[in-house]
Each structure stands twice: as structure tokens, then as C-alpha cells.
Image (cartoon, rainbow, N blue to C red):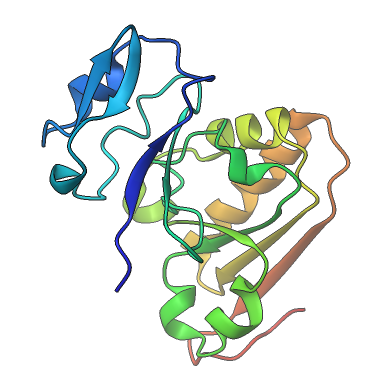
Length: 183
């Protein structure tokens, strides 16, 4: 298994120090007014530093890996992997309910996941930031047929509206039996 490590883009770092404070392992510190990964061996790859970075200077990278984090609540709207991306916004359950999730939906897409029922947040604000500051090429929503998944679809549609951009949207629904209902 490849290991994920913090990558800090010094040109984007404002020197606020929020990431160093959020890093419970002490892997990140401040050097000459910029955040630095000081101790690679302490970086746990969990990403407590990511959501506090106001400039999107922090990302996790590994060779051949997918962008991380994938939780809508944790991702920085300014993360560079959103530029020119085809975005998949998926309800948590879809990856488990639909066997073709990885092969059919993740390929060549940046993936964000969430559960509007369990997270009890309105994703539309974060998603409208992502769409507003990045040149996203397309958005696919993958949701379950259950009513609570309607929240993720509504949040994406609200975010698209708030962004003021014309971004192609596709909504695909997975049945509770694991079949695709709409395409």
C-alpha cells in the first residue's frame, strides 16, 4: 500500500500556521514564515491540516494516487486537483451498493463523497466554493434511491446555481438492490 504524505505548495502558503496547529502529530512546522513538512515519519495521512488551510496550499500526494481527501467536509475548495476536473460527487453508500462503482464511475474523475443524513451539514456552500473558484468540466452525482440521498443531489444543484457557471450535470441513481436506475 502506498503511503500518503502532505505536500505543501510554498507559493500558496500564507504563513498563517493553522496547519501546524492542526497537525496533532507534530509533522508540520513553520520555517521562515512558511509551513513545512518537517517530519515525514510522523505524518499519519489523516489530513487534519487540510480543512484549516485557507489558501489550498496543502494536499496529499502519492505516485499514481487519486486526490485525497475525498470527504466533502474535509476537502479544501482551492485544492489544485479540481482544476479542469470531471467531478464525481457520490453518496457514501453508493460505493458499497453498486459493484461497478470504481470501474465505471471513478475512472478519470475527482471523487468527493458524503452522506447528507449522517453528516448533518449543507454541502452546497462548500461545493459552490469548489465550483466557483475552479474550472470544473463536468459534475456527476451518484446517489441512492432512498429519500435521504436527495440531499446530496439538491446540494449539488444549489451549488451549481450559486456558482453561476454552466457546468454539465448528470445524476445517476443506484437502487437498494445495487442496480442503476437512471443514466
